Length: 423
Image (cartoon, rainbow, N blue to C red):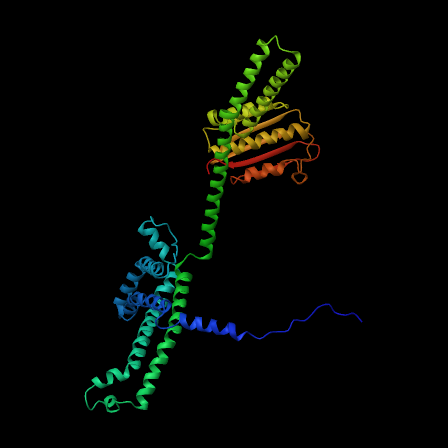
């Protein structure tokens, strides 16, 4: 027999010491004099007049009813604005509209003609008015019943209520009923206020499709901001290296070269150290120059993508035939993405494709930058094997671009990239 290692845990009853404070806290929060009850009552009372126009119009006869309904339809957007203002002022909750604040009256009128807003203003708003009136009536009734022994003496003699005046059982029952109603009304107020808020958010706020659309727009703008910030940071680093460290290395190399040429009477060991330092400084300058050019080439910012890619093509170990048809400058961030993507693609072609020729074509059409890189190499490029094509695709996607690769075994390889001219 196998002995089970799973130990059953006994089910413990709720701790009375923990339940008691929770109940007392809930009772305090729903006390008639609590801040939450006052806030909920004020929220409901503020909605009382908002359903009255619909109630009045629906009670009109014949032609007046049609005119009133037409007027309500025209004022739907205004009614929605008032409801959102009530929620924002009394609840601190912002319910965004379907249109930006500066939209004209005609687009706002069209935006208000939805079944959700019509349902709220023609059905829910009258119910809100009824609920608000009910709540105010309950508050008034509870206070009247609770103060029975205070006002019953003011009634004239012979009144049926006054005839039973005095410390009677009936009076005590009425007072207790008023006290009970006074403490039960806040719970109803909280429920009605929650339903009121839920209906306003559900019917007068943006629907799920609009929320997702705004989220997509926000994410797209955030991505553009991140890409622009990264490009600006790269430019700053390039500028700091060019104006700072590179200039210091150039000055150091000049001083070492001057010492190498003028100091003739020093020991050979010291001269060897100076020569080595001079050569290392020159090598560091060259490496730093390549690094700065890799961060953000100055020619790209000064003369544009055509001139920058001409330099890349001239430095390529594989002959590159470049054809550029761009009517003007495009967004700087897109230019940087295109430059570095083409540079990496040409480096991959020289390293892996064993090509003897690369054709590079850039043209602009319908607000998009189209780049085609074709080589006559051995083909077989596969983005899943870590050949650098994944990085190319990510660079293009960073500005909402796309990249397609056609590379059968035996060649040729064609990379087609499409980028937006403006972000």
